[in-house]
Amino acid sequence: MPSIKIVVPHAHGQQQASDRLLGFMTQMKQQYKDQVSDLQETWQENRLDYSFRTFGLKVRGAVEVQEQQVSLHADLPLAAIMFKGKIEQEIRSTLERVLG
Image 1 (cartoon, rainbow, N blue to C red):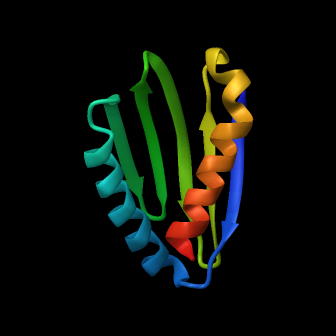
Image 2 (cartoon, one colour; image 1 turned 135 degrees about the vertical axis):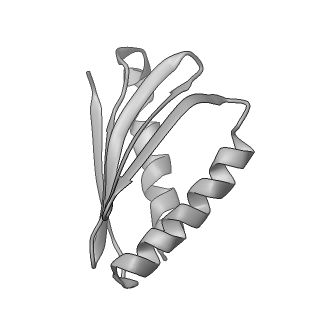
């Protein structure tokens, strides 16, 4: 199973970075509600474990918010392997914008 690991530095501290990500995720859930199903989110302290289905494909992973960086890990289905680079680029760009 292909996976993505992205680390994005930030200067907001753990709580503010978490708040920014939560706000962004709320917007994304509303915007893509017709394309995402079976969304599962579990926050434990500074870590979010997530899974969802999109276009019939299951994606799962975790986001860890630290004092100076956010780490994202995602396991992609094999069917998405040819899009891995594009997916990684989009996620990195979005995290940099949200945490900028």
